[in-house]
Amino acid sequence: MTNPLKPGSLSGKRVLVTGSSRGIGADTAGYFAEAGARVVINYRNKEARAQKLVGQIEAAGGSAIAVGADLTDPASIAAMFETVADQFGGLDILVLNASGGMESGMAADYAMTLNRDAQINVLTAALPLLSEGARVVFVTSHQAHFIRTVPTMPEYEPVALSKRAGEDSLRALIPSLEAAGIEFVVVSGDMIEGTITATLLERANPGAIGARKEAAGKLYNVSEFAGEVALAAVEPVPADNTRYVGDVSDFQTGS
View 1: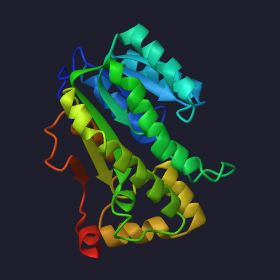
View 2: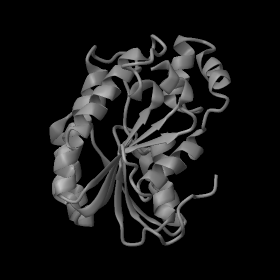
View 3: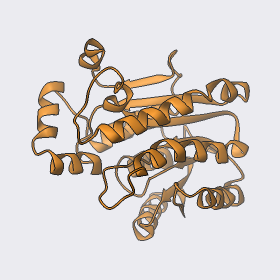
């Protein structure tokens, strides 16, 4: 996919994308870097993959660093932002992309810890680095955004509920963010083909992604959705602070 951001449009901007060593986060970070931003690639434990992305960005003439952090660990979050402060001096865009909850072998409360608690902890730790005019972007799914009114696949429900809880907790901060001159937007998309979540869902419920694609008519792929996330960081914030990607009519009528 062609980068939706204009070359040089983010020159001088500093960006951190959580969970950006692969998938949507990696493509989003790549778009920012191509547009001239200095980018922080955040990873949990895949340092080699993150460093490879940094190398690709630098080879293309961009600027990036990789910073590891376990977002469920407040001390690890604090250390990440100490590095960001030292290397970049501040942030202009923070994309809260990291999420999970379908992985095997995790604690029963892992989804809520990552998708709600960690999101608040990351934003709170980032606030001293966010300058006036900065933008915070939270990435979610239609299945999570509308979970209170539209049921989703049972296998995805714990993730959906935890991501909606995270969104609600972040939205509660909008007044204080706006008072500091910081903008906030939620990007909500349908299931994304090629993501880890889609793969795990398909494994747990064979045919689920195909059925969703048939019902929706189209599912975005990773690079297409990443382009929408990148645009959400620069285009005007909608009145309800929500940027919907793709058709949501079946979710709204279902509510």
